Image (cartoon, rainbow, N blue to C red):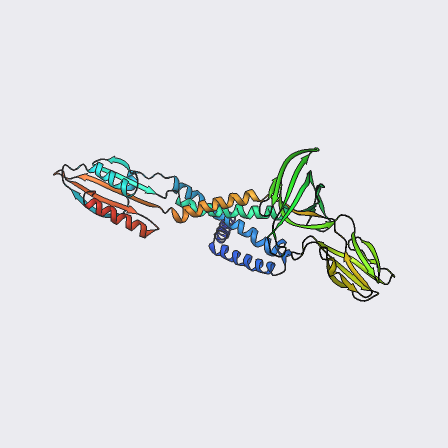
Length: 426
């Protein structure tokens, strides 16, 4: 009974192992992941944190690892077997040639092979002289290098997704920041050091209507109160300090203090102070105005403030006032509104990331390139020339060779090599 159960368990494990190492399972899992990725991209990003995505992803990693365990030892043995003269003699014959007695056949064959293929090795086996050359010895390792590379990339992706850190830090010139505002609302994380914005600059294209050409942050990193590093962070040119990478993500402007609004009612001018996003009553206490937003260069026309105006319970009107065009102030009911000169300062928005999976992903891509090169650009090809003297001293030669793949390239080399050997190496 126990032997029967053992055989049954063995067959079950063999069947399970066969399914786990099957290419069909790989294709099936990739199709599931593709469908889930499409659904997640179309508006369900939380799907990437559910078993609908993580389950197939884990099975794919298990499938790749099973293929590695199943095939890699055999591939290593094949790649480690040296190509010797004895093995060269087992190659299929591709052609024959004969040279007259007195010909320096060994030297001529060695030179012909060197010119056509590369420097051959030489071995004497009894009465036979064997010249042999091989390439693509490591080719069997290529597919398994690709498998391992995909596993490393999957590990890196999971590490970054669940243990990575991503957030923002907003800095004003001269202000020191020590916390990251995480993408989760209301959550922050200490950096473990200080970062100070020394200067922020915005350069605009001429005649572009205010389109920025470049914006940059001059940063200083401090530890224990001392400056450790001065650097510049630009768009597409991030900087790294500690375990974090800082990207120049955005910028904005804010007034130094409240916005000063000049209000004229009849012939009575008056100046109001408007804190950002706070309603302030106009003279008469019936109408209200609020500074909603400040821009440093709107449409290429300079600084401006977006205002909201409402009278009683009616829906507010939204409009812009330009600093450099006070004559183009806004008339609303009995009031005419215009801006006093604005005192603005830029602030910089830096995106901060820490991804522990990046080294794994980089290692995976490097290994992936190496595996693809071995699998597709280094085919296993072998040639051998066997020389033997007959009773009259003439040289009888045979050209041997094989190539499981890249038959066209192999055939071209073999045809040229055989033609030169038949001509006496010329």
